[in-house]
Amino acid sequence: MKEKKDKFFKFYYIFILIYAIIGLLDSTVGFMQPRMGDILFYTNLVMIISLAVLVLSIVALVRFIKRKFKKITLVLPIYHIVFQVLAIVIGFILGIYAFIMNIDLLAMQLPLISPIISLVTSSFELVFAIYIIRKFL
Image (tube, rainbow, N blue to C red; front, top):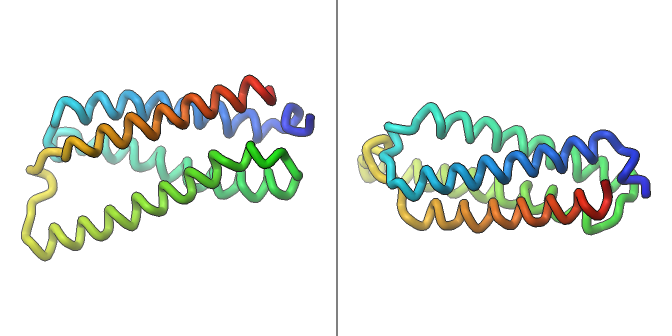
C-alpha cells in the first residue's frame, strides 16, 4: 500500500486523532456551560488548531488525490474542509447578528447544542481516524 510509506499520511491521521481527542475534551468544557469570556484563551487556542486542521486537510486532499490513495482516505480531509468552512460561515453570521442586535458574546453562555455537536463530530473523527490508522498503517 502506498499510504503506508507516506510520512505525511501518517502525520495527518495521527494529528487528526489528537485533534479528535482535543475535541472530546472541548465538548466536556462546553457541558460545564461556561461564559465565552471565561474561556477566551482556550477558545482561541482551539480555533488556531482548527485553522491548522483546515490547512492540513486541504494539503492532504490534494496530496492524497495526486498520489491516488484509496478513496476512503479522502473522507476526513473532505469532511474537515466542509465542516470548518461551514463553522466559519456560521460564526460570521452569528457575529454579524450579535453586532446588529447589540449582544455581548463574551458574556453569554454557550448554547447546549454546541457541545453536543462537538461531542458527536469529535467521536466520528476519532473512530474514523482509528479505522484508517488500523487499516493503512
